[in-house]
Amino acid sequence: DSLQRHFDCGLKAQEEDKKVVLAGCVPQAQPRQDYLKGLSIIGVQQIDRVVEVVEETIKGHSVRLLGQKKSNGKRLGGARLDLPKIRKNPLIEIISINTGCLNACTYCKTKHARGNLASYPIDELVDRAKQSFQEGVCEIWLTSEDTGAYGRDIGTDLPTLLWKLVEVIPEGAMLRLGMTNPPYILEHLEEMAKILNHPRVYAFLHIPVQSASDSVLMEMKREYCVADFKRVVDFLKEKVPGLTIATDIICGFPGETDQDFQDTLKLVEDYKFPSLFINQFYPRPGTPAAKIQQVPAHVKKQRTKDLSQLFHSYNPYDHKIGERQQVLVTEESFDSKFYVAHNQFYEQVLVPKNPMFMGKMVEVDIYESGKHFMKGQPVSNAKVYTPSISKPLAKGEVSGLTELMASILHPSNFHKTKRTQELKGTSEFYQPIPNSHPFFNILGMGFTKEFDTSLGNPCSFL
Image 1 (tube, rainbow, N blue to C red):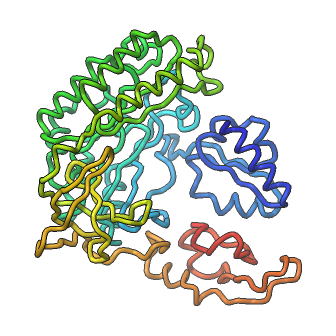
Image 2: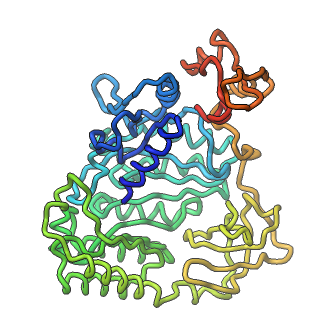
Image 3: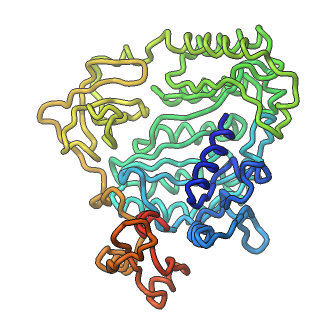
């Protein structure tokens, strides 16, 4: 279905005489699919070359950049971390610490697109974190296909990176660790417990189990057993009081029996995970799991429904009503009625929409709970703490620019001229600074000669 939607969108865009560039894992993993014919593709490690791809596509060329980045024959983690970018949320910095993975899960297509593990050096990650805090960020998310595998290709490990990052996190700012598979955290349990107890690190960990059946895990080639998963969770929950564990489960993997599924239900019932990502198995073309005899669709659907009902049968936050908590406010709720904050355990707390709370650490009393959230009332006369060491960037402002770059990209450096009549009735376009400007020597790239505002503002190319 997703492939068909991509195909339909591509056709529609081409019928409207629009240029199409596809990016991400799906086209990278399946570049020879019929729906990709004639379209430009930019691979997951080449996103920093989007300007070149867009420019060539506008000229009518079909461009495909799918290679892996290398230096002296060694694979790199991906695009440079110091490239200018626009944060979706100016208060939150998302840093990819490595790409690819060490596993060969039989159901996964990501490995086809991203390849083997490639980690960024610690000093580059620390520098990126420092820069983010200088730009007003108060929360950092570390992400990758498997954060636990970090550093195994460059002679280091995840705890070493985390301790280096903790050193540069301002007081009150927070770090959230992304998904890690059980095998790569088992050998670091003691150190991980110490790190997750640190006041500037959320006591939160996302550890996918996928199934509570060893036979299913073996068919998946997950490289751990259920006992390994339980050992990780039990140890960390004992050493890190209140720790939040999130996990993933796949329903209806090929070969999953009724007993296998009952074992999975029992695991969820025993641990009552507050965050559970439930996925109905879907065979990805070209993966080994797609070639195994499939569980009937109606069985997969029923198992997914049963697991979902179990998950919604308990409320993980009822016992927290009446607690006083410190929460960091970082965004607005989807319904725009509240601000969204998180406590030390990365549990979601909704607070009143008071502009003075945004980006602040606020003390609240919990008075209500739901399945996925709590509601907190700010304590009267309580101190509102500002963790950011500088004023956050404005929404849409480009991160990572030097003072020179920022001045060059200011709108005053783009003058309006009349569009030519063939641009369908619109009245103006922006003509950028000349390629001789020092800005182009810094970034090693330039804009097109006539910048079409229908493509967005100049910063969107960076």
